[in-house]
Amino acid sequence: MAGISRDDVANLARLARIDMAPAELDHLASELGVILNAVARVQEVAGQDVPPTSHPLPLQNVYRKDEVIQSLTPEAALSAAPASEGQRFKVPKILGEEA
Amino acid sequence: MTMIKKSASEMADALANGETTSVALTQAHLDRIAEVDKDVHAFLYVDTEGALAQAALADKKRAAGEKLSPLAGIPLALKDVMVQKGIPTTCGSKMLEGWRPPYDSTVVSKLRAADVVILGKTNMDEFAMGSSTENSAYGPTHNPWDLSRIPGGSGGGSSASLAAFEAPLAIGTDTGGSIRQPAAVTGTVGVKPTYGGVSRYGLVAFSSSLDQAGPCGRTVLDTALLHETIAGHDPKDSTSINAPVPAIVAAAKNGNVKGLKIGVIKELQGEGYQTGVLNRFNESLELLAGLGAEIVEVSCSYFEYALAAYYLIAPSECSSNLARFDAMRYGIRVGDASGVSAEEVMNLTREVGFGREVKRRIILGTYALSSGYYDAYYGSAQKVRTLIKQDFDNAFTKVDVLVSPTAPTTAFKIGEKADDPIAMYLNDIATIPVNMAGICGMSLPSGLADEDNLPAGFQIMAPAMKDDRLYNVGAALETALLSKWGAPILSHVSGLGARA
Image 1 (tube, rainbow over the protein chains, first blue to last red):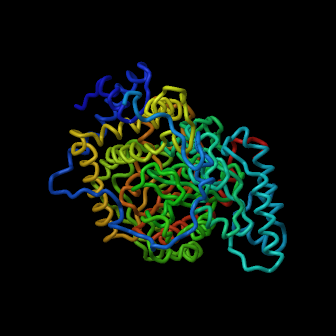
Image 2 (image 1 turned 90 degrees about the vertical axis):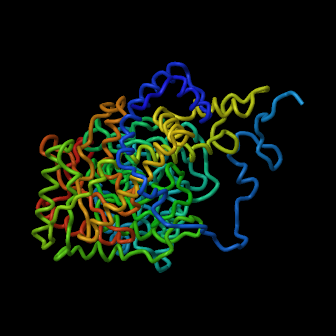
């Protein structure tokens, strides 16, 4: 049934932002094939007339009161940052060099 | 040594009548941890100083005559997926190595308000993904019954700490069985509360529609006392139920099943279940029948699809939730050098930071949610979720509670299933339906399996917000089993040798 190639896994890993060594891609491709075959059986009973359930509680738009409450100080929020500068998270470059 | 073997409620009595102090009790548990945890490895971090300070505060309040909570001064072990301000929280992952959260989870706030003493953080499968605690980046936890065996997972550190008498109470989280299955294989008690019954604020998310924090203990009453301490509505968690907490402790003190209808789920026994586990399960049913309960068989025909649906829904939500680990705001950052882009840093960090099972689930979830496969996989799994909910709804029109073995087998050997994800996933076959429907479930020990003398678990399931029924039935069964055994099951713990 469901087949998944090494290239498929490489693409998924790219989408999920995880570098993967070639050996890991091969290993995952075969493992995911087995797992997908096992889980594909959900399709046997998922008829068109069955409504989906995404969550156990039928909740919509739960808001707390619009009140100012104590929140983290900038120092606390930045305390675990890999790098920071002033009151900002410092991140690697996000744009290319051209421009 | 004698004090640490008591139940939490007995310890509370000893504190109330001045027999001991919280500082002495806490020190006794810290000593026990120092003595046995190099073998058990239940803890990832022990907060010696913080625990003793909390204990001293509880003693001071007691001496001043303040009105205290039932668990004031009692030590507890906290699963490392629950954040505690300033205390390292790793979720068993390299990704969060060294992270000290800047805030308390609501569960921790409630424990503090009740003067419960937090001893430290317990080991777990990475980001709560696993059934054996072998997926921890910091090495496995060993089952105190037999150190070569798994303590269950993902909350194996919490369950092992109870069975090793390192803590009388623990907090776990249960996405597909991570409180109940560890309880089953260590001879302890664990409850997955109704979804929304205990706040998820400050619980590092794995699968948000399934995750639920809950109490772990050595007795039904202890578990009830902890459950009532941490339960209740929390405005910081939009999925928290805004309704009164059921009378859990009262139910645990009641334990009367006369006239109660108990449904045995046909689909959760038989093939794949160890004979000794089934024998203890059937004995427990006889005891409950002897106490006046009416035992009937019910069918939940869609449960056979629950495992498949779970292993699509949970990885899908996980792939989305774990996107937050992007090396930008907290957690480790790898490969940050001049000229390296943020995207490359993310890729490198996530390669190094996540372990095999987490990567497997992120990739599986990314696949199940991707365009062209969404309807066939995630969409179909959501429909199965509806069918499982309907199975429960129908069953609960006929019976008050449902029961099954908690896990199909007793604790297996460390390493035995590490290379076979499907075999590993089968551990959760009886616990997963409860999470899918958002209802509540308990595991309590039903005895030792004949084949291996290891603990087996009895699972009780009740409708949403009827958590009190778990405790009523659990207390009745516990009392009946105790009078049959003559001593608590944990008096047989053998893995720690003479030290136990």
